[in-house]
Length: 589
Image 1: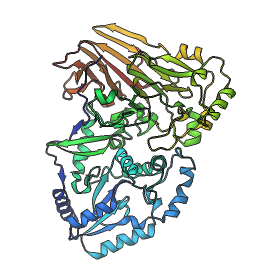
Image 2 (image 1 turned 120 degrees about the vertical axis):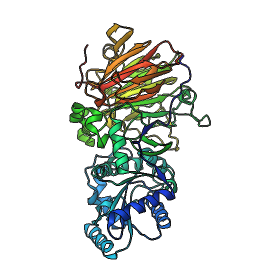
Image 3 (image 1 turned 180 degrees about the vertical axis):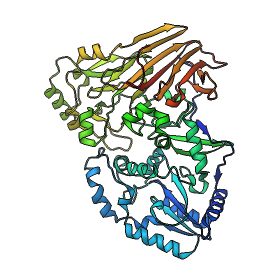
Image 4 (image 1 turned 90 degrees about the vertical axis):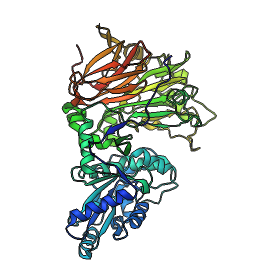
């Protein structure tokens, strides 16, 4: 058993030398000073907010901190709520979980004449003015100092669970899954499209993940410099942990999490759509969405071929599923590519795999249907299981295979599957993580007391019935292939199926293993051993320390790197698993 790790829950990325992080009164004073220097007249500041920022609180703070300024909530120029609802209804659908990917631009949510009138009024007033809101930069004013008030998606979800609403929507008490859906399919797509046009010209970035009064401020140059440097070295995103109805105890013990929490089900250890980056200078940090790096530096981060294939999206996801002393995950299936594109407008699907970081002797994985299963009979049994008095007999229809530490199970889309209790899974998958069709959830309700959604009709349209016992044994089990075993390093391909676009390699070593990104982003996790250093053979970046179970990203631009036993390590054996996009690197030595 691997000993307790020094898992870092707050990894940081350095800001450029000489950068400052201002907060509180000093932040507002710095903003005022810069705006006055830039204006040549009455200063104007545009604070363009990500949807989810507490705009009323920010307006109140600025009115108190900058009493000489007129502070305006420019979101009053938005279209009426009922008009917005009608615009996005087709994207939201009636489904509790799934919508259709939207392609709105932010100006479509506003009344152009009112934005123009607001801009004219501000220019004519000759008074110091702050415009605040999502889309403040849309107001046509001269010589404005532009601030991006940014917010991570995980923090948005925390706030929504506590009663926050979606943008311009009185839905405080609405089901959190519906709030998330509105963000995922409409608001965040529109917001990322909007702020991508701001990155090159923002004068300041404001961190609104904590209290508005204590918000951290950095210059736009510091922001851009930190992201430019980040793609030249390994780095980690800030993980977040979440409880669940099937959650376990392994992460709580091994990763030193809050012992008072009942369980932890998930850790999103590398999901840039959700995770944050912490930018640090002199011990002070600002938190920004990790997607900012994906959107600003996609070629250097992803590599030319991966960027050409996926655009500015991070296609690889590493996360943890903890069922130690917990329960089974829902029985589920993921959509085929044709189905996810045609139904939801997503251009690739959630192929995935389970890598076992740990497991008890009786741990299992549910994978594929049993030989000779009648589809109509199984679907009928799943339909009947909507009645709690008629539970679904999973073992009658679905294969159960033993799951042991360091096993790796491929799960191409269309394959019925679930992780069983008493295992600790590192899930290595494609990123579209929302598209899971639950077939049965063991009769449970969610932590909110509401039955968890089951999408049997979607499942019916995607289950591949030929993924039966023989097919699974031949294609998805025991697929480890030895690539090389020399120089103290054993390299293996761990067997993701040919239908999946991820290539996964495992390297066993006692001292060091040499790697090369070969022009595409690499994502790794230290699955055995206590600590390693990631080093550059040419000294291009400083050594980067990684502890057991930590996921780290090596940008495509890095090229060669070495994973080396850390000084002072007490481990004798180390192993990493490394994922990259298949077809963008050489897959045979």
